[in-house]
Length: 194
Ligand code: SF4
Image (cartoon, rainbow, N blue to C red; front, top):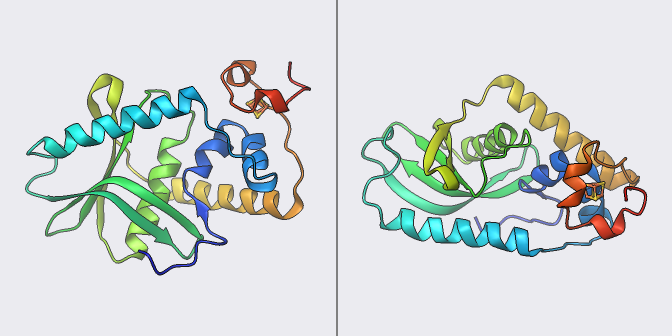
């Protein structure tokens, strides 16, 4: 998908930041501060290594039979103006299965919304989505994510909130859990927290 205009499209990954703490989205989307840490680099590294290993494996997800595997598939939803990249898409005669690799088993309430976004985008691009999974790297196992209508409604709500944030540029309150701040790459910017 190289022919779409990404100027005003949100990355689906941005939803993860927002659900972790709205301030991160403020820093990245309004102040254009995009920080990378050893922690996030480590996560990317783990996912890259896993991708290489997964590509070598002859069979895909054990619950998906006889599918053609595609990796790093770009998807776009023009309805919600979202772009993203699915780690693995398994194509079968009946439709596709979506798989995202996770370097952690901590969800923070993000996985369902992320997979809802991928499913929406994949469907908009003409795919029949048969199922969604996350592959949890530390546990080496798949977990099915059944995207429900309420997940789609939540996705729409979050996208609307992010749009509000971008338009009004009001810094959100800090995260309620101080533990999140301790491992946050933006901690230096939040003088009111520490
Ligand atoms: S330090 Fe805490 S309040 Fe500040 S952006 Fe990070 S998680 Fe949010």
